[in-house]
Image (cartoon, rainbow, N blue to C red; front, side):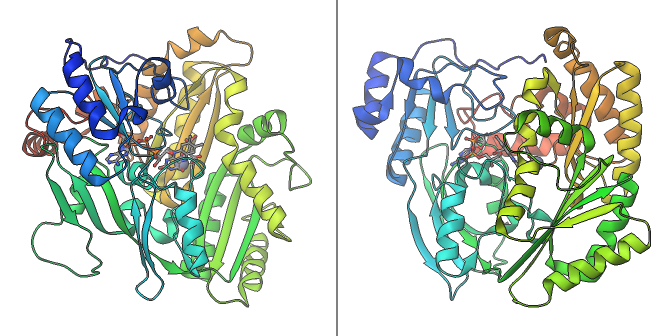
Length: 478
Ligand code: FAD
Ligand code: MLT
Ligand code: ZN
């Protein structure tokens, strides 16, 4: 993959500035040298970063002071949460930059079961937010494979999607209010708890999904929902994505908003799981070309299993499904999900993997997959497409593993070529080259090819307004 890290400033951070930055958070929380390493690498090991300092502020006031000083000294600032982002947005590539890790800001300031909201600081780990909500008999429905590590700030910075978006929307749909530190250090106290507020432009949505380029989110008011009383999952074997689409529609018409997840998995991904995921077992008796992991969730205790069973029976009668296993208990449901979330890791031992995180209109998923598979295999005979993901949202992680036994480096050298091919097909269907992971640096240079020029102009104008000196995560997104 080719990308040019955008080096804003070649000059090193002066010892005096370094000392002033460190003083804001205290020496203990100002990291240099080896101690910075965990903050400079990311999950896919695609990028290796550089920075002058990693700062771990404990309060919004400290973040504000850091940005004031960064503005004065023209120091680039890279906001970072759990460092699980998959497009390099959280990685600093500038040896004079300061990484601001929000992980110490991990307080849940308030939970209101009555008001159906919680106020979390940016560094709260997603799973901790989910668990705290459940302790109050409420659900915070954002859910993704990295939930044990990723943070609310990173989820909002990247507008994460995940496996519950089908019913509850993506991260931006789950936010009532925000607290943000601007590039000049001023604090926007926008922690509103209002469902309705039409007092002008809705600035929340400028910052959500801006990948740390417009401001540093320090806290958020998150929406809560009734806690589930019943959850039913099924692992379904299918002939084709076309049948998956029919099943999705059938389930939506029979279960409505109770259908909370509909994940598609190609057989190749399951084979990788069986080889590399400890304890992985096939829930179904025989192999199938495609699988769907479907989940129904309800705040009402009774009737959900019957709904799922009868919908699957109807689907079988209509020849939409080849086989299905319903989770008999929590352990089985967890095992189904492990087969889905494990895919991210089990591609790794199979060698090079060229990634795509694309979306097309839901009804176009089958045609997209058919066309992409044919084109990729024609381009690289023996290449192994491993499509999986959030079919209910039209979002497919269209990853391509190298031919078995091929040279990893030679395969990965074709990253841009394969991207161009797949993204070209995505464009034909009116899709997006980044459904949920963001742009970061990975897709920055592709953006001008796919965005309306007027839209790009508006994005650049926003960047100039919010960050005129380009100190916030420079070289990311734009
Ligand atoms: P980071 O990686 O630290 O940062 C992500 C971006 O947000 C960066 O651009 C960073 O600069 C910015 N940022 C971080 N904190 C702030 C802040 N306080 N204010 C402003 N900007 C900030 N993503 C999905 O959308 N759906 C999935 O299903 C999904 N599954 C995943 C599964 C695995 C196993 C892994 C490793 C990743 C997955 N991801 C997924 C990607 C990633 O987990 C998400 O993007 C997540 O939201 C990032 O959170 P983080 O705290 O790790 O943020
Ligand atoms: C997922 O849905 O599992 C992710 O977004 C991570 C990935 O693409 O591997
Ligand atoms: Zn995903």
